[in-house]
Length: 138
Image (cartoon, rainbow, N blue to C red):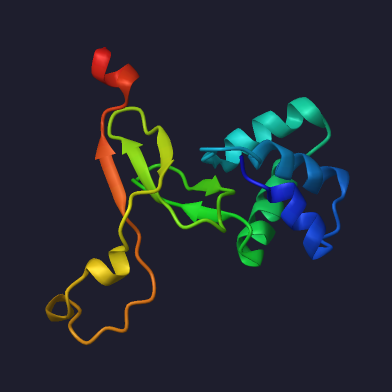
């Protein structure tokens, strides 16, 4: 379970009803929703919330470093509240389902010096692809 709401409260981020609802929708494990999915779920909790408010709130959360913007394919960007625990993504090539994974090893140190081409590598994004159990059984 992510601790997004607790992190935002700890930062003293003003939790208006709209911001709180967006954070509640994003809070959880393996959450990778599009902005439209966040809006659809937020409207159920707070019918008057606008699409613009959802987009603005997501942008603020990304700017604060509390939510990651994930683009694993040519589909819409997704928002990941698991911003403070290093992880990679496992993506279904058919339906686009995304799961957070925490493999052992450090991909920063796994890259040999001969393959760094002089780069001072500071970040790594790894995406594993395959078929989820539902798509594999179809």
